[in-house]
Amino acid sequence: VQLQASGGGLVQAGGSLRLSCAASGRAFSNYRMGWFRQAPEKEREFVAYIMWSSGFTSYADSVKGRFTISRDTSKNTVYLQMNSLKPEDTAVYYCAASYLYKVYEYWGQGTLVTVSS
Image (cartoon, rainbow, N blue to C red; front, side, top):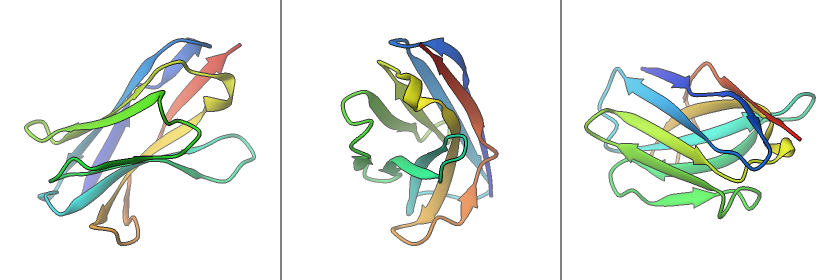
């Protein structure tokens, strides 16, 4: 299984970015696809997840109403649309996959998002 995250960059506060996670190597119909982030000198934290088959989503309180997770099953890609970005959203963002609600076992390489004030 390979997860390839992309789309990070430098953006001003209030701006938007869309991250992509291209998934390959297996069928993901029973998988949960998640986004996590790790800011400098902080622990990795959950951002959002989506169930591949049903499209059910869940978000961390810190991003609810600003971020939207989605997936395109035809492209085997998961997206994270990030709006109204804040400097505290600055982090390396990782995509991950888990079988149903088990531990996340597959991780992408991360993409850096920097939000300037």
